[in-house]
Image 1 (cartoon, helix red, strand yellow):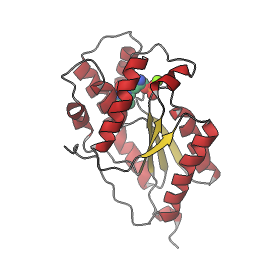
Image 2 (tube, protein in one colour; image 1 turned 180 degrees about the horizontal axis):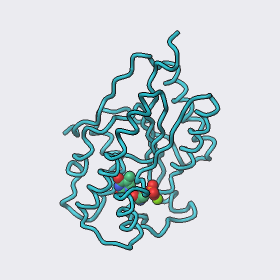
Image 3 (cartoon, rainbow, N blue to C red; image 1 turned 120 degrees about the vertical axis):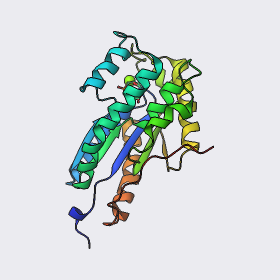
Image 4 (cartoon, rainbow, N blue to C red; image 1 turned 90 degrees about the vertical axis):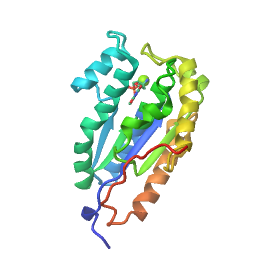
Length: 222
Ligand code: NYM
Ligand code: MG
């Protein structure tokens, strides 16, 4: 059998609305890899620690105003500036779990009350970023999400916006050549974690040593 060292790591993205349980599931998946003795890294977008991330944070918390187009491109730049380090980690055999990615990037901007930010306009700067090996969508209604201790005080954390975001996520997935594992996120953390791990276990078992190449995110289908 091929040695594990000859395989690159998996790029696993977890997407969903605010309060859908993404961060808990990323933590659970991280622990799962560690228990298997596998190397793993956790990445969260936006990464608020970098210069672009600090600008994004100021915008989200209402400390700064930004043109809608401009802040959209900052979110995208925040991913682009991280991608070479993610790629080299994957090549070194590390699995990378990503909490929000390009899919959030496109739909949150497109959900704004600004007709200039169409879904396809918002998707464009994501083209060429690494395509996830596994994409999970933690599906929850905006009503159930709102009941989970309520939304916070950041921009976008309003139920009306979240319900538009949910519809846009589904519309976006329909227009991409990508497999999406939609998980019912209205259940307990354990139930959701079991479903995610089952998919990851299956992928690890079937992973070929030759999958060193990467695919990238492509254009939206019509
Ligand atoms: N968000 C997140 C975007 O608008 N564009 C993006 O590209 C990303 C990654 O930022 N409400 C939004 C979604 C969230 C907010 O993310 C902050 P989080 O995961 O709540 O820290
Ligand atoms: Mg949030």
